[in-house]
Amino acid sequence: MDTGERFQKIRRVLLYVLVLNWGVAATKLFYGWMIRSASMKADGFHSFSDGASNLLGLVGIWIASRPIDQSHPYGHKKFETLTSVIISGLLFLVCFNVVREGVLRFLHPVVPEVNIKSFLVMGVTLAINAGVMIYENRRGRALGSDILISDALHTRSDILTSSSVIITLIGIKLGYPVLDPIASLIIAFFIGYAAVDILRESSRVLSDGVAIQTEEIEKVVLAIRGVKECHKVRSRGRPDDIHIDLHVLVDPEMHIHRAHHLSYAIENRIKRNFRGVTDVVVHMEPLEEKK
Image 1 (cartoon, helix red, strand yellow):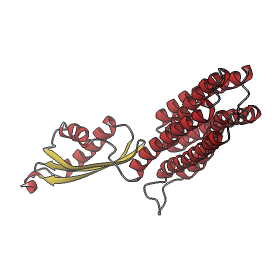
Image 2: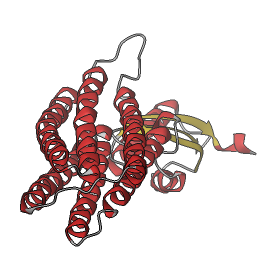
Image 3: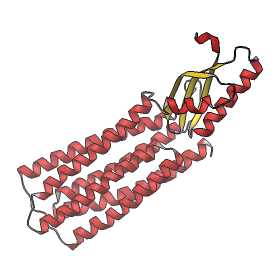
Image 4: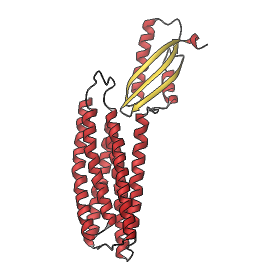
């Protein structure tokens, strides 16, 4: 699959999910406002942030899909990862607003009106969110997309919050309205956890953290005939755009043409064994230079 086709598929997934997320958000916000439920409105704002992250994802994909140019010789793919950081920031903002709403409800209690429609709304939206998360996570891993995987994590936290809202509605029905603001604070925790999870992985990519363990690369390279030793192995990049460079020690009598072909063999072997590797730089050294 070429890069253009990949980005088209990611864009299509984001558009599908955007429509579903904002449909779910509008339903939760409207009904949460009708029955005066802090937890349902908090869940609605969370779903709304899902849709906002989809929009950010579409912008990120548009930039990331640009071809290599003079100012970006490695391409623009990291803009997709940068968008994930922005999504994380959006989640932190939602988390803060939900906490604020929950605290206000503790200070100024309101008893929500709970009926069968409340459970129906939450049950249907929960099922939609579960379907979105499974679909988006599978497509994200298949396409090697940071944005889709991050957004799936975002939606996973939405499922947890929706589940807590349903439990809260049951508690309110049984005469425990204090569960409503408590649930909104629990929801804030799930949102914050998802934000940290997304930020951690995105930061690893943007800070050039190790993409593939050095020992795994060395094991593959040392199995190639003609390679005596290898060292200074480094890897970095996104799951779909990994760059590797390494030093390989060979027989000092090896002809330059043979060494050239060996470097290609090393590159091809690495790319076959590790998915997502797009660039391998091999520096050849005669064995005695190590002494």
